[in-house]
Length: 276
Image 1 (cartoon, rainbow, N blue to C red):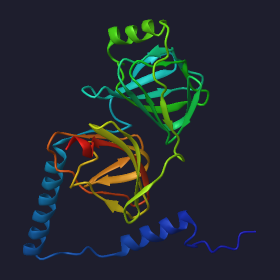
Image 2: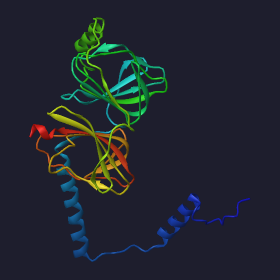
Image 3: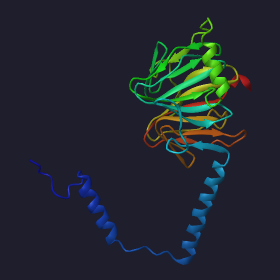
Image 4: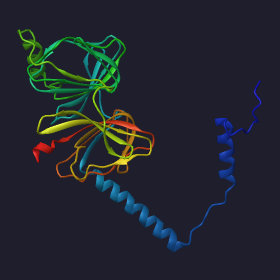
């Protein structure tokens, strides 16, 4: 038996009806012309400032851009050509043939799970395949969304080279896999923690975890030259980024603070302190 009143605030439908009724009953608030003009100017100034702050960044949203068919059940979306960064969407049962890497390739799992040879990775996991190493079959029984950086996908001759040279003997250097529960988190700011994934002396890759309501920035040493939302939502300045959204900064760009109202997990890359 339901004892709730028809206008119980815990009932989403009733709450919406009450809210809409109250809003309709409110009389419009008229500002004096000078104040209304000042508010309008401040609003447009904020819009211009937000637009100017974003001009030095490349933004690619998960639900925007074009997906291309790569293999049966496998789609790819290019994020940044110069960095050879892409998103790979694998349907359940899809697979990518074994291949050899000719440059370091980083992989972050955003959704689902995949088997990279004998290694299983899930959402939030990081995998680094070293140049010269050979990958076994990449497959997913459940479906997966992967971020790859340092991949030849989109360059037909290089893809063919990677597949053919995989037939040669030698496995190369063992890959590095860090599952989301591996490693140590370092406190960066109240409610903000960092986990180092890789630092080769030139660039470093890390995970940033923000609790709900937390904020941080890297203005002293930008880490977010590349930023990918793995889980949750985050604001980079005024820009709302959701899971699967990608951002890359131009050289010399002013990096805004990052904050999250609901909490988030971000994959971030930037210059290594050793490169300074």
